[in-house]
Image 1 (cartoon, one colour):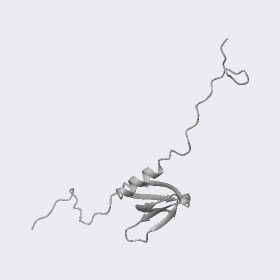
Image 2 (cartoon, rainbow, N blue to C red; image 1 turned 90 degrees about the horizontal axis):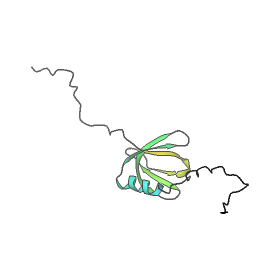
Image 3 (tube, rainbow, N blue to C red; image 1 turned 60 degrees about the vertical axis):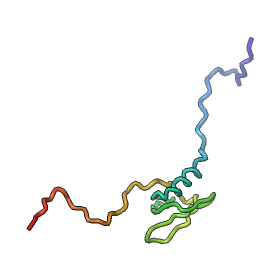
Image 4 (cartoon, rainbow, N blue to C red; image 1 turned 90 degrees about the vertical axis):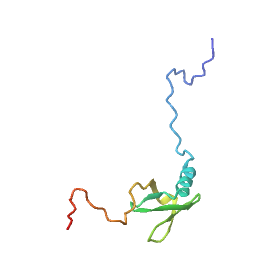
Length: 105
């Protein structure tokens, strides 16, 4: 008879192991965001959202560079999430509506 190695004589199948808490991809993601200077939104644990681009990061903090506002050093334990900002930058040229006919004199 073959040895089965079951505990407590139970033949019930074991469940899958849960996924890991950390995928170790944080540094890769932050490096990619910093290299392409992608605009990001960072939501803080307090609910505040700040926008800019990641200039520098290390084990404990992220430096967020912002246009027209002071740069921020944010501790990672204060960050709820970081997301690439998909909102387009405001355009400087005037957009003419195509629904309104242009009057010529």
